[in-house]
Image 1 (cartoon, helix red, strand yellow):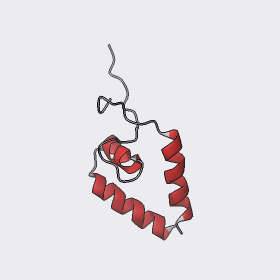
Image 2 (cartoon, rainbow, N blue to C red):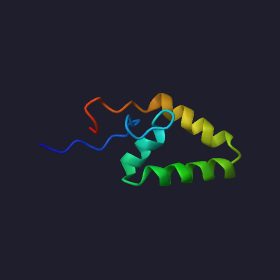
Image 3 (cartoon, one colour):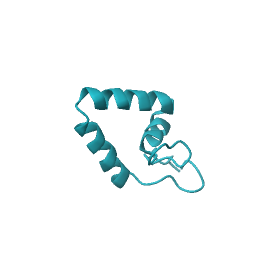
Image 4 (cartoon, rainbow, N blue to C red):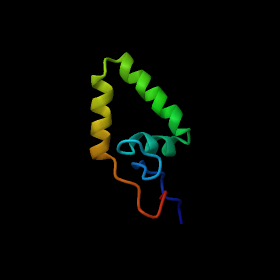
Length: 71
C-alpha cells in the first residue's frame, strides 16, 4: 500500500489567527515562528495587499487539521 501524500492543512495547535501559517510550518517542517517572521516581512515589503489577500484566500481554501492531529 502506497503512503498517502502529505496534505496542507490549517493547524489547530500552532495558530495565532486562523492556523494558516502554523499549517505551512507543519507542511514544510520549519519552525512556525520563522514562517511568521518571513510572512510579516514579505507582507510589509510587498505593500500589505498581496500578503493579506493570500492569507485570507488560504484561510478559506486550506482545510482545517483533523481533530486527531496531523494526518
